[in-house]
Length: 259
Figure: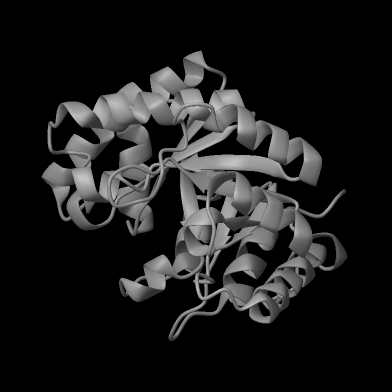
């Protein structure tokens, strides 16, 4: 079995879009997740001519576009009823299809935070529609959130689609006072095969990834989400090398207690 790919996210790099794809190639990453962009979040990924240029950069660099992120939803509010919600999600799905990315994910933070039962129900309603649109395009749709395992299962049940997943982040749930290991153990079948690897106070990415390996969940890519916008190339390469070591452990010692 091949180890997972290792990748980076363009919204945590000093460059975006095609330039991020080229940077990923120079540092030895296998793939990159790209943000859809928009007001306050950089140039639109699907701006005139950009998707074609990114496809060309991907081919030249040998770097796969792994996923498209809809980070603007943290500003718009997934539950806001704003007409931009559905149009933005459709744009992300179409961009992913054009770039050969199999996954689109929607963060639920700030204005899209799921802070109770009503918010969970409203979020699931929008995601149910978006998951159907993803399925029609042969894509997967994922939610990135800080729900516990009970809430996460309730969301998946409410969405009710085989094209829906949860995007695991090794640190987000820790920052919210939860335990990502407990989430992995409880709902491994709901996890997307791309995982954000992020460091932070009290976090332990190796412990979370060891739990994923023990769960038997298929992992296609480990994606670095530490903040590298300061353009410290040496630190970026070190973080990516650590990610590569984590990826190797999925084949070397998948039942280990710690990576």
